Amino acid sequence: MKEHAKRTEWFLHDRFGMFIHWGLYAIPARGEWVRSYEYMSNEAYQPYFDEFDPVRYDPKEWARAAKQAGMKYAVLTAKHHDGFCLFDSKLTEYKATNTRAKRDLIKEYVEAFRAEGLKVGLYYSLIDWHHPDYPAVGNHPMRNNDDYKNKEIDFDQYLDYMHGQVKELLTNYGTIDVMWFDYSFDDMTGEKWRSTELVNMIRSIQPDILIDNRLGGNIKSPNPEIFAGDFASPEQIIPPQGVTDEAGNSISWEACITLNNTWGYSAMDKDYKSAQQVIRVLVECVSKNGNLLLNVGPDAKGEIPKESLAILAEVGEWMRRNADSIVGCSSSGLPKPEWGRFTRNGNKLYAHILDRGIGSVNVNGMKPKVKKARLLSDNSEISIETPWMGFHAHQDDLFINLASNKLPDERDTVV
Ligand code: FHN
Image 1 (spheres, rainbow, N blue to C red):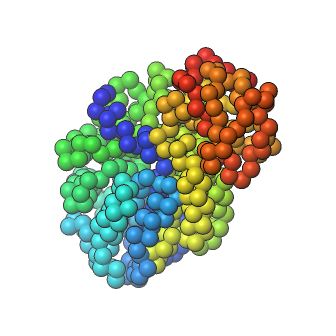
Image 2 (cartoon, rainbow, N blue to C red):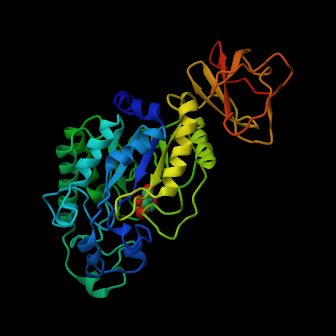
């Protein structure tokens, strides 16, 4: 579909984004599912609304951290499952402008990230544990409360509210580049959300916006539903072979991955990935035609955890020297080499030597004959005359730029 290809052009070029999970759950600091895990009623959760006062929220700092990390876009939770709205919705009082913050946090976010040249996306939860007309199904905090479960609700009222808020987000905050819905489950999928009506409304307001695949439907179908989405959204995993449609053609996908183990802020979870692990994940995604949406969970004061900032800064230092092998790149068309992965941008082939134990790469066997090899980080020459190239991949010599004279023949093998 031509308009789909046009819409996804920037997405397939940019490759690397920041996911941001932030809201009232940063106060209990036990992750964004705390209401569900601890069966909290609206009343039990209300103190967090009453307290919420992110005095150190400065999205310009967030945007700088993202940009310096080499990220090109971001997606921030406008409303997560707890129903709390970070934006000044006219459809509810359960919003940031009614807390001590008294700020439209989404407005400040889109302005700050655009000012740094990043594209802006909004995450919006289909699930809403606060809304009176949302049923106590799935992992709803009141799923074991018979009084709650038996009360009369009007789900269409909730859908009118949900559709109305999406319209507010796409009308009041300028160009939004990604609408990241989350998530369909069991029979709560597709038309249960009135998805065709919702996507038609979205496209009527912002025709070029990208939509993820979590409204339901089958994005891999040769004739996907209008709401099947523009990209697949594997979570906490990298698909072994990337993502393809039913005909075996690669389709747009984006892996969303946490830096520790929780999306929302957790004071206890200090089990962070290293910068090297993040770089490997990023390289693997791009080598398989995918994007990486890397998550941060700011704390209740509005700051990204220092551990996350340190990792982002180290990844950014690598990206400062090596972004050419990520941004604008895709899969290479070559089989995965034993020593790492390839990415490709047109006729530039990038060899990412990821397995430290293997210090040499035999490029002479590569077809077409490699014209020249350079270490991308400092453009130093890599000799390709010797039968093998014994250079030692160390901390920042993660890959070389093999400028070959034409695209590798799909049938080529790397010896
Ligand atoms: O339940 C959410 C979860 O809190 C988080 O937002 C992730 C991010 O993709 N999505 C859902 C779990 O799949």
